[in-house]
Image: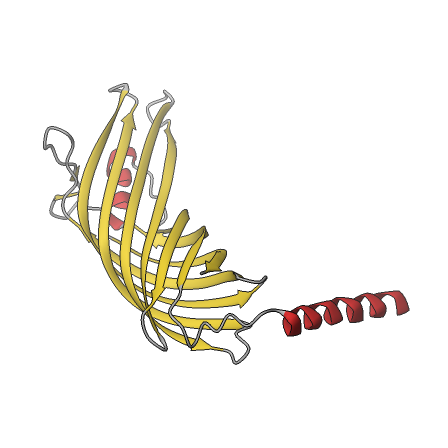
Amino acid sequence: MKLKLWLVITILSLILTHTLTTQNLNLKNRNYVCLSAGLGANYINFPDVSDYITSITGKRTKEFDGAPEFWASTEFKIGRDIAIKIDYSYISKQYNIEETSTGVSLNYIFTYKVHNPVLTLNYLLFQEQEIYIVKFGAGLGFTKGYFSQFLPLSGKEVTYGTNGGILKLEAIFSSRLGEKVYVHLSTDVKIGLTDEARDANGNKLIIRKPFEEDRNLRLNFTGVAIRFGFSYYF
């Protein structure tokens, strides 16, 4: 018990010493550039993707499902508590579905990939010693999406592309780790709208649903995400 207490006291002392001796970056009173990057986990819904897979395979996929994300951003502080940020994220997910209703095993592969560059305006809240920074932001951006399918009877993969826009709201907690390095934790809500997806020849994908009107596939999406990464301030 005494050993555990000693370890806790030692760790807390080291953290406090590091905090007190770390150079003040004076981020609140000067303009800076911040580079950040990391990984994220999305809980996201592509309704047309779900409906299309069901129409082809007869098997229903989750409307909201997890998808990994890679992201990177560059932030420029332009005022006492205002910054603009250029953010890029890449979200991708693959579905491997086996269909055996005919007595023969048929393997379908469906993949979506979405590139999202977003311009965000952030409001900044600095803790007095700049041990942490809280940011709230809203942004608009461009979406470039791809949907690929491999159908076992055709024996080849076909990719369909589409363009659109994205709206995003975010909240960021940035905690100081080293002299100029901060840990980045954030959450965001996003909505994306796109055109109808087309292949290289201009062909569209038709979603056929019983008792409903057919429609063409779009990569519209709604989602929330949690991000983790690191930031470096210049």
